[in-house]
Length: 434
Image (cartoon, rainbow, N blue to C red; front, side):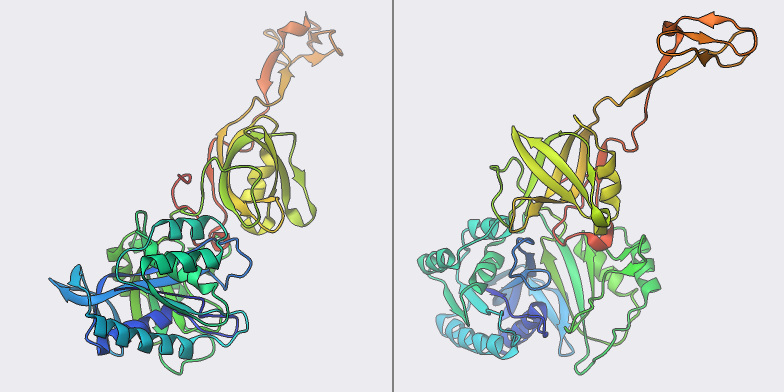
């Protein structure tokens, strides 16, 4: 039984990841085990109606078999995950579904723009439900029809927008994946979180699989949120084992519960190469093209670029908060070949979130006067096309005696990412996105 939930948190609080731990506890009370791993699935980061990180959650519940492993702790009891299992009976499923929906409604944020949704499917859902939700804008009515066709059980409150994420989380196959171990505050904890920054930096040094724990440029700690939610800290890792090891090294206020999630963070799944241009609103993509003209430095330190991508002119913006990227963009020149990834907002301007310099066009050259062999002094120019003369012995050289030297570029071929605190959850970790 595959369960997906989305759109339960808002600006006034709530947390969908915490709600999933409650649903897992509800399943445990119904004698249902976790089969596989709980999933935290980030969706299109450009949509305007997202709340915070635009994440949906899913988990498979059933009657586990084989040797389990610990993936969390809720209510002082370990959460065990089984690699295999058999589905619950129809009676068990129906009873759990109604209880789960009551829990979702009770623990969802009261914000007016929150649209909670719960999806329960007996079998896998079409992977296209995930692909469309992470790369574009999806009509909830289309998802509603597909869920009905698949025989899935679902409930919504307010609008049906939450169906998109809940269904996508169930449909995600995890072909590219990372992990995040989230620790939660104790019940009743409030005010400023206490997480020792140096212990987090030490964990990142000791465990190479961790990523985006802190920002060396700004000294900002990236594992702890600053919102009204129950999360204490989250450790992102390329491996499940790395996150579990690192948890033991972080010093913080008491942890009330924790859960290890399989995620699509850091995968670049939202980026599609060679998209159809021009891009529609709120569309993430990876563009390949040639820089046209010189960059424009805009007010506030932002940089404007023009890109010729497959014959289509695309206006691009590189924003100052990304820190590292504007410095690179300012050095680009007409004819440079680059890959840019990012996305559009409500207008067609492409907001750049990463740059891969594939080839640098020849830069300007300058003439270097010859050095006199007798005086060891560099000759001086006599004017345009008049050659050079030694200032000591007065020896002369023709114009062609000068050597040509290219003006060096301030950048090299390679990949440039934003400063860590400005990176999106889905931003690719590798040298460049696929």
